[in-house]
Amino acid sequence: MAAHTGIRPVVAPADIAQLGRLVAEPEPALADPPLPEPNAAGILLLLLSPPTPKEPRK
Amino acid sequence: MDASSCARDAAHLAGRVLGALRGGSDADLADFLDSCADPAAGLGAVRLVGADVFLPHLVLNRPLDARDVDVVVASFEFLSSVTAPVTTEQRVLAWHDWSTARLLAGLTGDVPAATPEDPTAVLGPAEDWQRWSVAVAQLSSLAHPGATGPVVDVVAAQPLALCRGVVRTVLRRDFATASRLTRWLCLLHAAGVRLPVDPVLLLGHIEPRVGAEPRRLLDLAVARHLVGAA
Image (tube, rainbow over all chains, first blue to last red; front, side, top):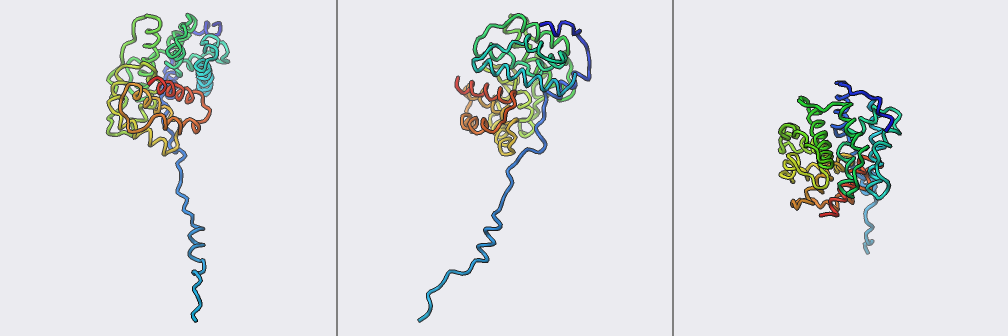
């Protein structure tokens, strides 16, 4: 434990505020929400597709 | 103290604690501190990981080395505790530090730390469960095996707000916050509190999505332990 023996106690409001920000980590403002993905191309193909063939009249 | 160095060192320290929980060698706080390029950031990292540095001692009953105690005490000497919190961040830090100091006192037999003010001052009303649950997530280090205290009592009294909060984080795909809240959920489950969300299913959903951040993996390791002990 040689590394910290030379560190003297300090009162550093900026450092304590920094630590407070790290501890009180907020949730991300914008997460990664799933977005709606309507299958527009599929609906278009359905609308433009030819009607069901009918039996020819005799 | 450089914030990015502190966060990086905290991730390193959390990884060491996680390794110890998984049966590896001890976290060895003194050795961790010696390995830090900036000792000030290293001491800040000890404070940031907080009570979680004692998890191997709580969960696995590993003996607490006197050098580890020295490091935690040095971290409090280097950055003094907030005695009269005013802002929300200061209130969160006060409770976070209280949990660390309380566990240290419990393990060493010292006098327990003074309890901060009413926890509702930091959590707010549970009716505002979106904001409330984020504050609960910020205090996730208080949700450890065998945890008691005013914050635990307040959270345990609001299982619905907690479940709403964790489901919201999952829907937002904010799995970092979700992992911190899952810890609380599993603590309540271990205490026998009836929950409208299955914590085992929740853990199974979050674990593959949370990423590789060691502090969040530590949250989930604690949650998994709490569920296993229930």
